[in-house]
Image 1 (cartoon, rainbow, N blue to C red):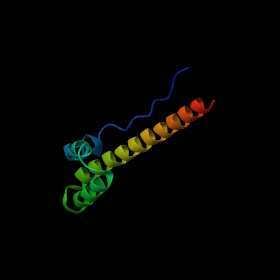
Image 2 (image 1 turned 30 degrees about the vertical axis):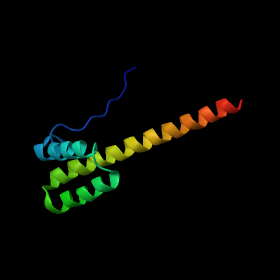
Image 3 (image 1 turned 60 degrees about the horizontal axis):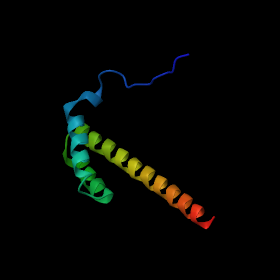
Image 4 (image 1 turned 120 degrees about the horizontal axis):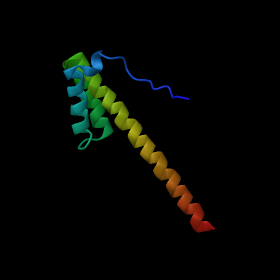
Length: 88
């Protein structure tokens, strides 16, 4: 039995250099800025940059946000588990 693997269709905007540039900018900015600052910069991209560059920036911000929420949930679960282990 084989698994179904979903991939994006070849071509499209995901291979555009502007889109990749926006993602790269957001990746670089995510190491030195808060999420609120990233969102403010995304607003500037939407208003002033190439549409695909803004889309790439916003996509990466969404990923950063999901990554941070996942890490926070995992750390919370770990802390809750450690507290319960100490009580026993």
